[in-house]
Length: 195
Image (cartoon, rainbow, N blue to C red; front, side, top):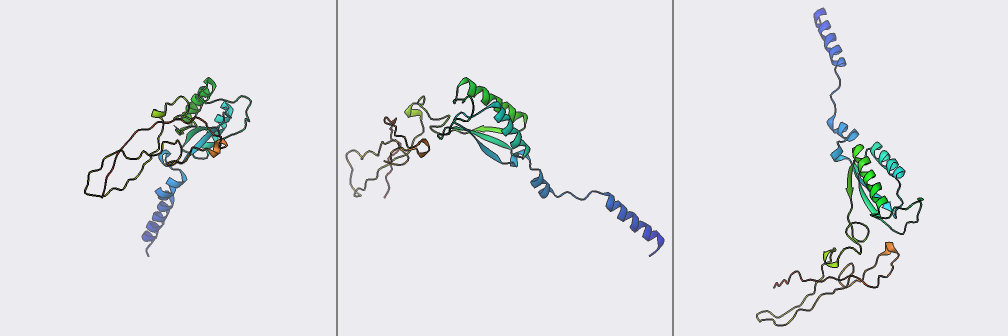
């Protein structure tokens, strides 16, 4: 090898050492995922045990560890009171804390969502009329002989408020307390006939 070739090889080696290594997009995506790929977590506010200081600490920690957002869920679940002043759902104090949480999450780049579920927060409660509340689908089946006209009323399905068909309502998370006057709303959806 000539001196000229050696110098060229040495220059190429030095140039390659000075260049940064090609980035591994997949590894970089795992090390620092985009906001759209970061996990979201349920953030329960249990039985009014909420303070602005607690909100700030929770959201600061969640943002620091790489969480992409929260889904706020207000629930009771027979949780004992652990704060000085409990913030009851939808009171002025609760709304103020909620507004603070949304603004704080936004400032930290966290997505903020809210869960809607019957009985615990947004879609259930005494203020919701039974005809506007969530429903369950119930049915009956009647077998008839083919080739003839059927007259008369079909048997009505169960109108019991509960989880499934005629199963009565129970809520183990609320201590299975019996609710004496269950709301009722009944309406027919479809009659299906098939061979």
